Length: 142
Image (tube, rainbow, N blue to C red; front, side):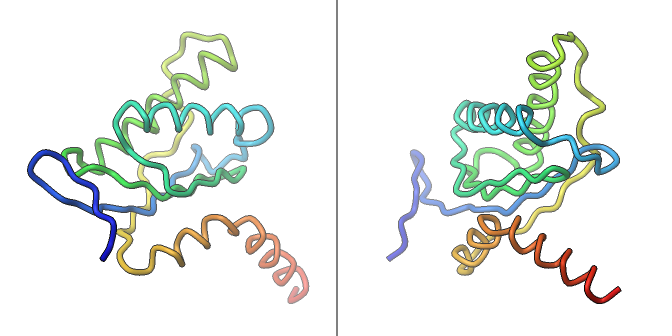
């Protein structure tokens, strides 16, 4: 039997694979920004009771596997994570009071996770290596 989570009148297992990118797909998530971003996302998810099952920030995009309680809509959680993380990155890194609207691109990719959770989590965990291998193949072909 699967391990389901529960709220007062519901048992649930809602898991999602979410990907979003910085504006213009610029390579902004590296070094200090990447470490700080990870801490910020963990803190924001904790505030909403969202579990991070897997996550990886590449220089030009973010992959996360989240378990989101059914009391929240996915769009609400993604908007919360993107909005608040942009604001906090601007305040903490650039010491500016800007609202951070220009950090993330509009939109995101979303996929529900059913029985193939292990495959998705493995993909997120090892995505950086597969990207490097694909780049090497692309250069070998050309």
